[in-house]
Image 1 (cartoon, rainbow, N blue to C red):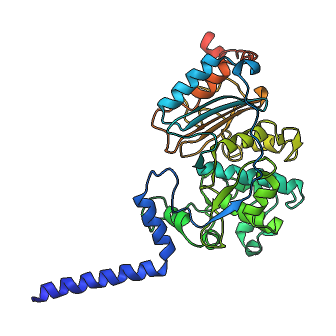
Image 2 (image 1 turned 45 degrees about the horizontal axis):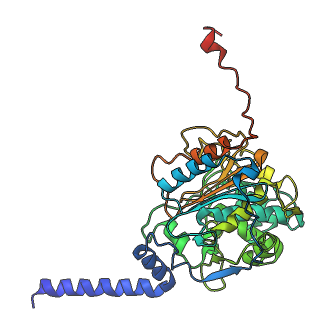
Image 3 (image 1 turned 60 degrees about the vertical axis):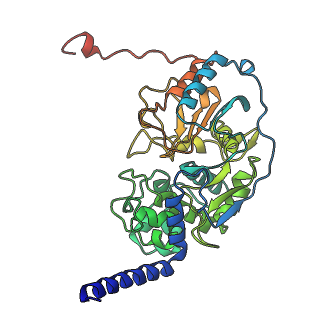
Length: 399
């Protein structure tokens, strides 16, 4: 055997040993990473393990009535469904005044189909923050993290406030993007100690000055909630929110057995249960006559952030922010949106909620205003806002 061949064999052996050592150093990370790459696009990611239960109470859903009883034109609902179906949707559910008026399902799904809630998950952290403030577990939205997270008491990051986290304006340095196993994104999603990684993340800017969407902010918010309440995040979500909405059991994805829950993504829940969250948000914290969150908290979530007026606390405030080609017909429309396929449009003035789910990101050209506008155009008691006068300079030159 030649020296060159021996050298190649030695190199190959060294690479195999290095790969084996890397795997043995973090087996759960590599198991998740490799499973995720092999099962990309699966309906429910098998690598969301281990999981922690958010216990539900399995109460009946909202009553189902005909669109006519809620003064909605069925033809416009059908038009909205036709568009949703053409764009790869799983479900389109419309509710008004706490009544489900329309449902359409595709790809074998139904009201109780378990879905990956994607970044819908983060809005639960915002709602739970409202309950924690109402329960006096957190003093006020501008409470600094140094009061809540002991590791940050003598740290400049302790000046980050709860409100900063709600508005994606923590100032923390974003993690590196990409699918490669060494990227920060992969480490955040598949890693086995997300709290340690979070607490090692440095500041890159002044808290509150700029809006950067990243998992760190809702993740740090969930840590603050655990420290403030003295409860596991899943347990607090269950008793303060999920059970009170009558939802079915749901599950959070953990970084390791007994470890931290992912608060930015990956909640497994029945898609119909998101209509309960929608009812709560449309009614500003009231759910079927019961006050779940103090009044005005959801309204506060809709307050534009100083860094970007098109966004509130994990919600979109304009169609343009969501990439729509037209504005929302109802000016008070706001949306729980994400990088995946799910959409939740909420219109408090009409007590209207619209859920449209999809497993995959929406295709290029998807109009985020089309479905809500079709539904709103069919609401018989909808009064369009008065037309605003045009720019006088376009009518009278020089003015």
